[in-house]
Length: 254
Ligand code: ADP
Ligand code: MG
Image (cartoon, rainbow, N blue to C red):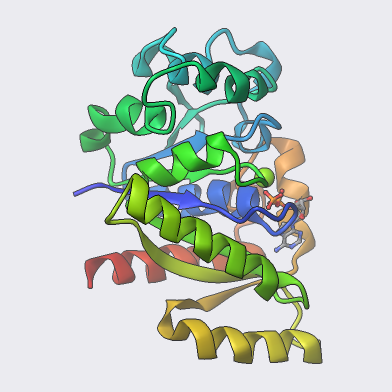
């Protein structure tokens, strides 16, 4: 059975794209059939898995607007998973979608037939609670919320939980939180420890045991268009994302 997971947080810079690319690669390494969907006009996930966003003739934009089929847009990466790539053109979809029927459900409809070919479909959401993100949430069975454990993190989380509640009521009754992921983690920070304590209080075992440390190799890998496993497979970042892939698979089974 396939699972569609939106990787979301309206804050930028919390590690959504890093998680999307490296979790996709980690799951693929474990033999899972994986599709990565880049839903951010910045196209960072696209570049991060080695696909040139400037050279796309078709992208997620065309798929959402019904101008191209899934097969026209889907690209096989060199890293054992496929990607629906994006570039800045996708920014225009935000406006153009408003005119269309089922504007919140375009991605769900575009993935409906294809999902049977994958074990995991990961959606890298943009850093906003906009129509693109709503498309991601409407298409998803679950969400992973990467977060940096700093003071304002919990405040942002309240907005996100409210949005999820609305999506559940209006569009997608079965969407679940698959997990909260602590990223860019510095165990020496007392603030981080306090935030973690509060997180556990509110979300209990929704918080992944796996923690993603701050690791320079994770920041370097995208400029080579590579997931961490092909860039530096013995780095702390690689070990952490491998552990996350394993933990996620266990969690989905339960
Ligand atoms: P988002 O998609 O939420 O905006 P990114 O994944 O693009 O966040 O991460 C923001 C920046 O931080 C990027 O430059 C990325 O390379 C870097 N980064 C993300 N996670 C880590 C990490 N664990 N260690 C070091 N740098 C990281
Ligand atoms: Mg991003």
